[in-house]
Amino acid sequence: MDANIGVLALQGNVSEHIDAFLLALERTGHGASSEVFEVRSPADLADCMALSIPGGESTTISRLIDKNDLYEPIQQFKGGIFATCAGMVLMATEVADPRIHPLGLMDMTVDRNAFGRQCESFEIDLPVAGLTGGPFHAVFIRAPVVTRAGPSLTVLARLQKGIVALEKGRHMALSFHPELGDDTRLHERFLKINGI
Amino acid sequence: MKTGQKKEQRERSKSKPQTERDLIHLGDLRFGTELLKRGFASMQKGGVIMDVVNAEQAKIAEEAGAVAVMSLERVPSDIRKMGGVARMADPEKVAEIIEAVSIPVMGKVRIGHFVEAQVLEVLGVDMIDESEVLTPADEQYHIDKKQFKVPFVCGARNLGEALRRINEGAAMIRTKGEAGTGNVVEAVRHMRTIMGEIRMLRGLDQQEMADYAREIEAPAELVIECAERGRLPVVNFSAGGIATPSDAAMMMQLGADGVFVGSGIFKSQSPERMAKAIVEAVNHFDDPKVLAKVSTGLGDAMPGLDVHLLRDDEVLQTRGR
Image 1 (cartoon, chains in turn orange, purple):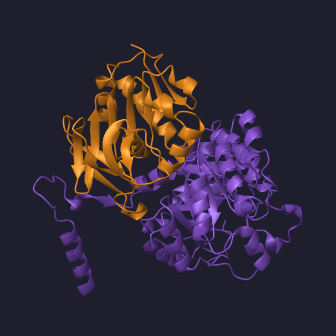
Image 2 (cartoon, helix red, strand yellow):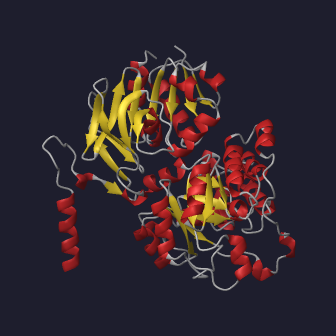
Image 3 (cartoon, chains in turn red, orange):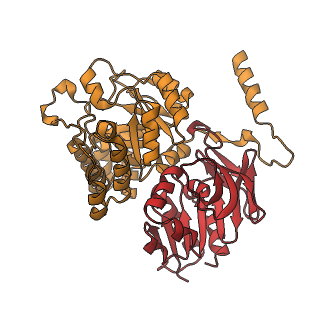
């Protein structure tokens, strides 16, 4: 089957997400005419089966979502959203920062830069619920954590500071950056829960 | 010995799990790796990093959508005017800027001045710019950047300089341009040079590549990596003379991953509007209609300098080869 996946390309780690999804699609046997493309305007969203919101600077991305009239189109988007780092911040209902205009798609409170500054960024082998093949090598960069998750969410992984991976229906939110390695298990799982 | 033991003890007690349900021990964490440094740099892509000299400017930059701010004592055009030795900013200033914003804060140190870098690292800056804009502290060696947990960005005029800096541990490269001039011509020259050299590599075989690596005084394995990937192994920003939204968009069209704006914002007539306009110009770098709109009614850009009229000792880009 051919798949179309969009990556929100306003700012941040866009090309790595495109490469990671291409690799995940290839590994799950999708057709060669599957596409992973940049989403920069509401019109681009129409062709997507699923959307990825990459890491970057959440204040910048939030501002550009509003500027590019993407706020409501993303809120009303029918497919699943794969949100990492800054993307996770934007998926929340509550963020303690007036500069962020969160999409409110997942009932959770997110704390930005929860581990501290860049020198406190870290890598760790993280056990993720339901993921076979051992822990996931997770890269946390000035990462957020979820300090409160509503009953509609399924927690997949947590650290002392809080929850770092969760799902809600077709959406998946991660504090860390699976696109920085070549382990595509989480991307593949996301494709699966979206029937792709 | 004693302090070392104490430190170890402190770290052990910190890493103690708080509750039974915690599966992860903080002792399993790895900090300051190459992946974390390059990953941090990668998150800045498509963004604008703005020079600021105080908390007030930092807030304006954050409000305008900057992905990070560069804290420094004086913007480059003022460094040119003042003359004398330009050094790392006062730690009090850096701390004040860190306190003021939630976006990453970077700081400049003199080329080769590893102690200024140690100081900025403990202050908590998120990236260090080992910068030719400040007066070099070492004319022989750059900082051994692999010794640090904090990532570094370094300036380059060509592929050889870029790869030597990456080999020393730089996680991000920026064109040097000619800082503080408001004149984009040197940034363009450096970006075209680096991109052109990488394109040229594709036509070379292994032996020719090794020969070319010797010629540009860069490690052969990094030259080969550039040839294979068709780009530098780390992100490549543009800096040094960007003064308008069109300047920023031009650098993006020439292949920059993002831009640094130094004097261009806070030396313009209306810094708030200029900052927002440059952020939007980088976001829509390939859409002239949007560029026309955001460039309208900004007031005067910073006053510019003709780089050909600079005396040899006023040229910053030749520092740190």
